[in-house]
Length: 290
Image 1 (cartoon, rainbow, N blue to C red):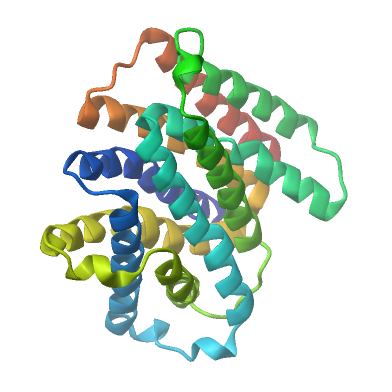
Image 2: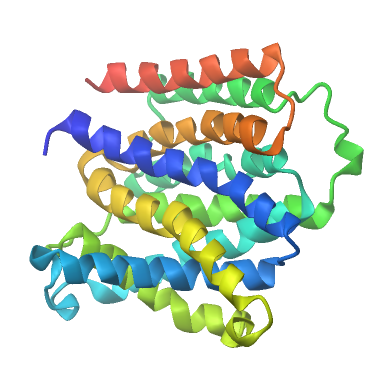
C-alpha cells in the first residue's frame, strides 16, 4: 500500500470519529443516557466487524496466531475507555467543547512517541503542534466561551478520553501483526466487551425502547468503532503514530462542521480561521516528512 493511501485511511478514520459526537448528542436528545448508548455502540460495532469478517474470506484467519493479548489490551485501554470517557463528557458538555478536550490527544501522542523513542520533538513537529494548538483555540472560540459554566466532571472525562485515545493511536502503530486489519480490529473490540459489560450490564437491551437503542448502536458503532478501528489498523502501522496524531487533527474541523449542520451549534469566522490553521499544521508535518 502506498503512503498516501495509508494517509487517506487515517484521515477517514479521524473524520468518522469527528462525526460521532453530533450523533451521540442527538441520541441523548432522544432520552438515552451514556449508560445505554455506550454498550449499544460497542456491542453493535463489534458484531458489525465480525459480520465483515464473515463476508471477507481473506480475513477469516485464526486470531490466536497473532499478538492477540497486546491487541486486546489496546482495545480495552484505548478503544473502550475512550468511548466510555468521551460519551460521559458529551453528556456533560456540548459537542464543540467535548471535541476540544478529546483533541488534546495530538500532543499527548507525540509526547508518548518522544518518550518511547527517547528523543526530542522535531522542529517540524513543534511547528505543526503550535499551529494546531492555535487553530484549536480559535476553532472552539476560546475568547467567547464561558469557562466558568463548564462541568468539572465533563472536563475531567474529556481529558481522560484524550489520554486513552492517544494510547490507542500510539500503540496501534507499535504492535507488529501479521493478521488482516479486520481481524486486528475484531480482537480489539471483542476484548473490550467483558470489561464494558461489567461497567454497563447488558440488561439495557431488555428494557423498553431497546429496538430504537439497537438502531442507534448500529449507527454509532459504525462511526465510532467500525470505521475508525479498521481505518487506523490499516493506516497507522504504515505512517507511524506521530504523523497519525497530526492527521487525526482533521477530526476537529469535521466535528465542528457536523455540530453546525446537525445540531445547529453556531460557527463564526474565527472558528473557520482556526480550522485553516489546523489543516496548515497537518500539511507542514507531512511535507517535512516527505
